Length: 383
Image (tube, rainbow, N blue to C red; front, side):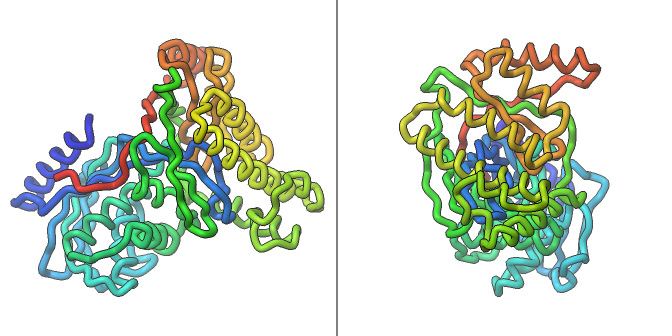
């Protein structure tokens, strides 16, 4: 289903639930991080791109000071509460993401009033493609437009991140929101997570006779289960052991050996080496040398599996089987412990898809799902 079709469906749902059409429908894409995992909250570099799929929000103003939130994916769970009651801990579950955005915008002094929000999506939830940030960014755009708040996109991204950090309780970095709001078709976004500086890097696999394939492994993940936060604390402790403010300040992965705790040493080695891989990947994309990107993806997966210890069996099998079937490289994406794999494959993705389906079947697992990962436009109004 195209984004426009999902937007039309959300507008119809809004009309059915509220008796009138929305004032507009806004779309924010999910993202794939090509390389650079768990480097963002360490002040490092990442290289994400926006997907064609994402989240839409059909929205309209209300005069009663209420926030009414409904989702096609949770049709029996509407949430309605006064804006004045919004605060961390006041909303639980999926609705904390959109409610958190309204709270963060009001905390920033923006004159955001009551609103009816109907959310719909063609992005698989829990697949490591940042459906949560897509919700936040679509809601942020919608509320800013409804109440004529002139907010630069970088500032909207920061407000969306604050919603996730403080309302939802996930200590995430800024990467997902930047990718969703600042992405452009045919490009990846090189982001310096310390300075906020960004640059667009060309990413056109088709021109090289290649394709980027997302493999949804079927294993769900949740950043709220504590393991993501644990990795962040481990990185902070590792930086302290090395005497630096952040692991971003260390360029040589060999320095991690100076950390006495072997677990912290492995965590640091992954972050330091992945920062280097991001910069190397961006240089390859600048020269349109995508074929040499494959080995970097493989190295990144091994690092995430062995040093950062956040991979999972379905991801490891997907990377191994895809490589044997002709993929140039592959790695797990997202926060870890479930979600998706990205593979750089020949333009005819059929052989890799078939091999993966057979590999999963041979282990008694449900078949993986596939998503063509074309670098796409960032968040925008659709209707």
